[in-house]
Every structure is written in C-alpha cells, then in structure tokens.
Length: 263
Image 1 (cartoon, one colour):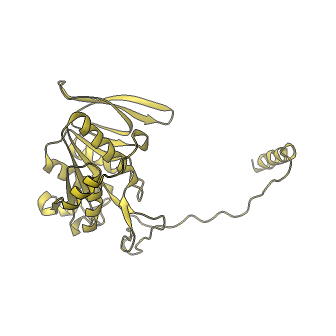
Image 2 (cartoon, rainbow, N blue to C red; image 1 turned 135 degrees about the vertical axis):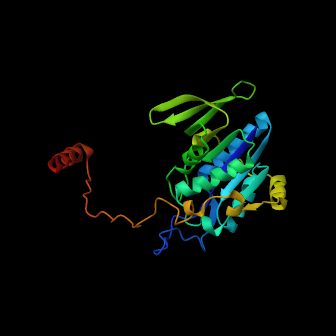
Image 3 (cartoon, rainbow, N blue to C red; image 1 turned 135 degrees about the horizontal axis):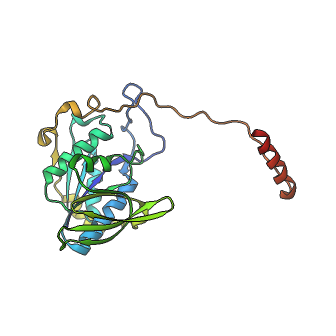
C-alpha cells in the first residue's frame, strides 16, 4: 500500500508576525515544527504500512528550510520525501498550494492513499486537503477519526473510515485511490527511533521546482492566488464586567437578574 503524506512546516510560536506589505507570515527568525495535525497523518501512514506493506512518501511545499520537517518525518517511519520549493510558489493561498501539491502527487503517480492533517495551525482553513482531492478528482473524507478496514484485494479496492461529526460519527466507504484528512483522535504519534534518525540524516531529498511540475505561473504564488489577506488585526480587548462574590444562594439570583436586564 503506497501512501503519500502531505506535511507543512509551521511557526513554533503563538507570536505570529505579519509582513504589512504582503500580508504574509514572517518566518525568518522563528523556530519551525511540523504542523501538529500532520503528525497524526504521518503516524497513521506508518501504521498502515506496517499492516499492509508498501511505502510512505512525504511531500511538503515550502522554502529550503522545510527539508528539516521532511527529515523529522522520515525519522518517524517515512521511506521517501520530496520538497517542493521555488520562489514562484511563495505567497500561494490554499487553492494555489493545493494545486502545487496535486501536481506533485500526479508526478509521483503510484499511490493508493493520500493523508493530510485536518488543518494547519498557522492558517486553520482546513482547505488544502480537500483542494488536492478536487484538483486530482479523488474521493475524499475529512475529519477521519479511524480507518476501519482496507480492502486491497477487492474489485474495486475500497477503504472504510469513521468521519467525526459534532454529535457522533459517520461510516464511509471510499474507492481507492482516495484522500483523507485526519484528526488527533485517530492515534498517538510515536517518538523517532535512533535508527530512524540516522537513516533520515543520510536520506537524499529531491527538490522539485515549478519546471519539474509544469504549472502555469499565473495560477500559483501570490499573484496567482484568487484569495489574499487584505487586513490582519487583533480583536479589541473587552473591558468591564462584574464579579459576583459571596454565598451562591445569594449571588446566583443577583446574576440572573443582571442577565435578564440585558435582554
């Protein structure tokens, strides 16, 4: 079973700074990590490989330093990795990013399943995974909390998953190849082994640019993105309020009367 996992390197801080001219994240001087939700996708891919055989290929789009995230993912059990890096990719929104990843997946060709974290911690859009599936026309399921069964010998081959809902879950059967975005309930990520770290350190990670993918530059990067951040600001801090102290038997009725006056 050949699995592709799309990962993203994100800032390891809550103090995110925005370039006021481009309205994009300032990544220089900020420590970076693998997007936390992608860690669950990596772990699930490795578990599926251990159960069904095959290989796990890691894919990331970003600047040259994103190679560190790919090596960390290799240490966790990945077999191969590809970095998508080109200046023309810079500033891509979720649509353009998913297009670049989709074209890279098509270039890899042989795959049964694509896994992504449900969303990135620096954008929180949850759009890239579904966008990839749309560009390639793959069956997809989002917010997957469990992979129930995989039928590789069936015709057609299918995968059965549980998709998390607000009030429960739904059971879905998808024809392979397919794309899944996963939530943290799906597993507990492992720690890298010493052997894995040593292998990841020696691994050769090819870098593909846009010439390798052949995408029209008008559809990628900041200029090719149909959505752009117009303004970034922090919401104003609310002031005021009232603290009720004392015996709950007395304070609760007072609080209730205050609430009624507001309406």
